Length: 330
Image (cartoon, rainbow, N blue to C red):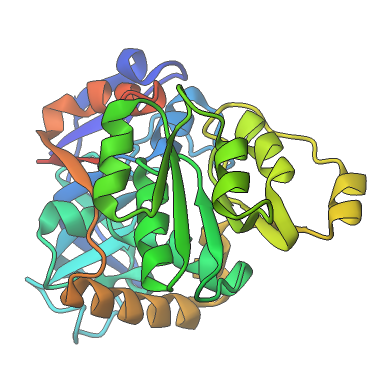
């Protein structure tokens, strides 16, 4: 089968190599999926660079999430929805065999039904982003109707999900994006206030629209200056949810500042919930599927590309040159 593999670390466009490899066989407790669409995520770029928290053995295939079709069940896996051959499902990958390939083997326990309301590309871009947004806003920050939610990188994969989920929760959403094109995309997602960080100071805007009170919840997948600015405009007893560091800088928070302003800094690594509380993940998936069926949420898929475009797609995402989600189709 065709697969993109990394044999040494570096920039995605330079290190992703097309290989012909055997079709993987599922082991006990595993399922083989025929990949229908793979979403491109920021962790894929970090994997290529050797900077992700997980380092699969070289060579490996990136691609951390997918929409696939159940093809073959491994030993000990009982057939039944959604684990029925031919069923359309979503799943995270089991590295080193990621989704940038024609087939992937994944643990049966993590396979979930693909929402019927979404096509293959949307379903591929649904799982990690919306689960991250859901756990950040509801489990960690406990966002409430009427609160102000500040979302950084609001035109990106997880940011666009957070905007939609914030609106679904009844929050007033302030979305921050870089440039007019991305700002327009955030506006189309339904954000109440949109800030182009290239032209405006988001701290000043948040203070203005909240009458000086600040944002009750901050969703931050960027880090660096985005985090630092958020501490200047977070409300009394506000919550900053740290989701990632796409900006490349891991901030060193001043805990004295959190003390004097009475705000909380909350970490979110969604993958740990998949390991420690799979029942909560399944419950969130059911609720997210319901919201998708209602049309309340829908992944912002900006480009649907052939699998051959993987190196360029991952590089563009790493460089911050994309809006919404890119998907690859074998």
